[in-house]
Image 1 (cartoon, one colour):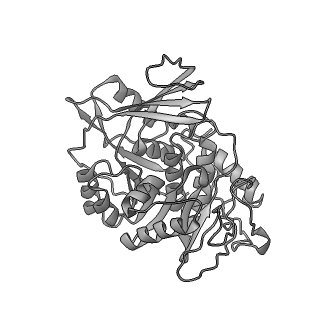
Image 2: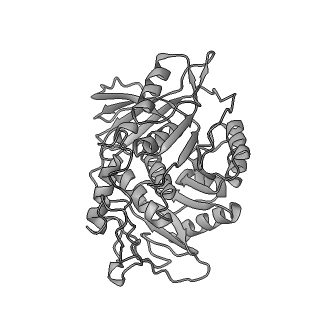
Image 3: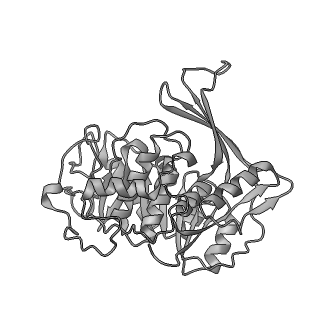
Length: 383
């Protein structure tokens, strides 16, 4: 792991209550909750929690209320080494909350956000970060941090569109979006029966934010990114789905972790894909965040035993994709994570090369990264 790396995460932290139910229902029904999980959450909060759990020196900047919820949230951050120096206390507004209904009967998620609309006031960032991460939820604090630390890498995770989203995105160097945000910002629609629409949405985003690296999260369909002007999609790892709530935040956090440790984009996306897939096997967002060792072990099993987690200086011979790693499987049949070759008019999208410059699409599985996990990693919260 890169020594002395510091990350500040700015945005929403809240208390999330996940209720598992096992029945179809309609408004007005009396529904029994089979299981309840109460823990901290929020986009910024969950990303910070993962980064702390995975051993990076992380600071969370959020506004919380003067209540027991805030106390619980701060204790959770402390349990994985996340610094709460930049958490501020609002005495006129309570800590934000969310109620999530996870229906195991039909695998659907229904969430109710109880926003606090309380924002940071001090912007007292005294630690110079290497990376600034934000969910776009606190405009003034984000602008202040960007202005104060212009050399820091800036990551913006866009899951909700606000009036300031476009402005903040133009000043961020790395954008991680979900499908609805990508469609809203481009005013275009992705049709999964027409791979060209996805390429067009991606290219439109690159035109709007031409100085940024861009990744679009597509949930169960994987994620979209580009390497050397080729637009690709990496499908998720096949696992037993339980609850996908918060998987996008796990994905974003793991991706940022990889980039912070110089994995490179495609290798970082592989880690993010594995982490997000593992998170869907457990209920709730924060409780489903896997340990770094879980993700590392899955990666080693998938990409080869030469990536020993206790050896950081192993020379990996296969730094370039091997010809025999190319596949042409659909998302529905892919047993494990891989990128695949698909023609422009294919009904199922596994990989798409951009329309510019080449019309034909030929990509292969991402190269194997050097696994950076070693005995010197700060194992705060890592089992």
